[in-house]
Image (cartoon, rainbow, N blue to C red):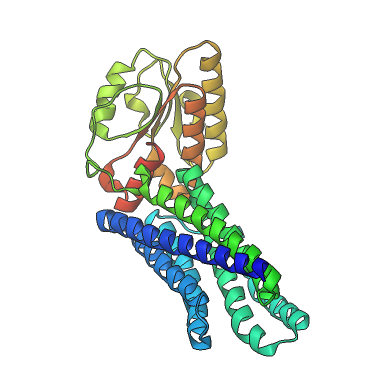
Length: 368
């Protein structure tokens, strides 16, 4: 009897922690939404309100209230999934076909899961209510985590922590459907939920509070160029000044206009036409792998001699015509990582008005 009293006390303490964490997360993320008006933040904020109602209802004895709690769980999972979809939309990204194809297995997996629960519990009411709600919620929460993986190139560990926590939370709902009626599992399951929810809240607040999640403070205004290690986006005016400063340096440049490039630069004319003779350094705009290879070799050479390698991409708009945006972002992300590791500089020349505002903002965030 004392053991049961101790378990109940533990569950009550954990429920208090989760509800307090839910309200704190909802308030912090809603405040972030008011600042940047990103609908993904609004969806995530409201999701934690429904998780609060879920935990509150679990402590009640009334069966109707408990069923409303299951509805709250379903709404929570739906908002997590919706927030992930809006996150991709705000970053001008589409889910990879490989990710979407995995969703096709979910209906079959769900039916196998439901049949398994029924065969194990022999309880049709439990299977049709609690197990179904836990299963559907788990599917959508895991799917939301899979979608968040698509922005890892931009947000790095900030989003990695979140999608790991989200997917683990979705997966942990499965044993809850099998053993949720068992008294021995209640403490284990609720403790796991508490740990995962606290972790998810921490990761979500960390992500939505990050500088990259915020709108540009300068409204996208051009900044004074500083040729230092790292990556940057510059406009045509800044690029003209840069060419004068860098005219005597062995810059690696991918360009469209070969008539206005310093002689000492190693220049590649990006074109679909295979020129010969004077235009021996040509490269197809779809051959991002070759550009990556050239950049890597160039930076490695300069790093070995302890010099600063500088890469210029003065054909970005042209590359967007021949490549999918997601592929182009991964290409730019690789170049950014290369220059950071080798203490070089990547300069991407872009006319702000040539890109959609969201895509321009994403490029700025990616290159810091």
